[in-house]
Length: 155
Image 1: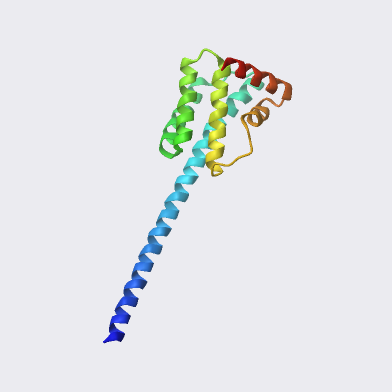
Image 2 (image 1 turned 90 degrees about the vertical axis):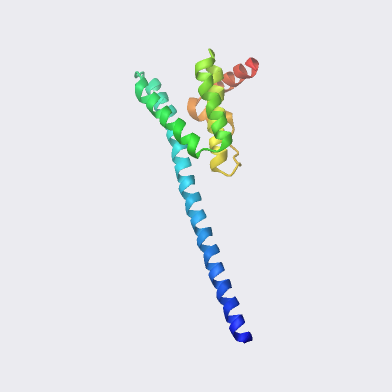
């Protein structure tokens, strides 16, 4: 009799263990899919900016319709897949593009957005600063310092 009870209890534990393992695996798969989509959304958003930067450096006129289409796609993707902090920074940057007359303020918000995306992808930790991102874009230390002084005065 005790052997039957032990067998039944053992079987129940094995089944419960299998169910828990299966659910855990499903959650991991969903998290990985979400993470991949989030990283793709962030990369696409930054790619839009780099395309514009490339056009400016090549003195080429940027296709505004294509840029707007990509930004709308980014809005959708960041709403669905981005972290709350990235979503907030993204909205702040978008609003600054329509509300702010000062390009420097828009750039400051863009730098905050890119930094927040980087933090989100790296578990909240990064040694990269807004200054480092700006240096990557401008590639001139004195211009970066001048810009940072300018936006610091505007605050």
